[in-house]
Length: 88
Image (cartoon, rainbow, N blue to C red; front, side):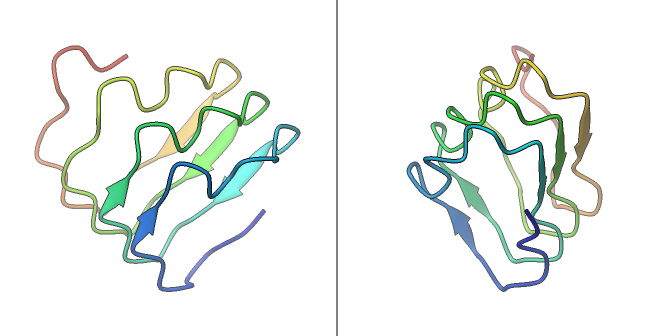
């Protein structure tokens, strides 16, 4: 699923609900500055996630904890300065 370049500024908790079979999600080139901690909890088959070129400054340590199949994560070109110590 590509939501690339759509001027999104946040990912709410239920925005991706019902997409359990989704394997690739491209949310690059948006204005995302906030991701609810429960946003990815139903994406149990996701293996590739692109969040590059957004406005992320901070990520919750357990944001990706439910993504057991994830093997590619792109966070390039955001405003992240550091990841919290407990980030898994």
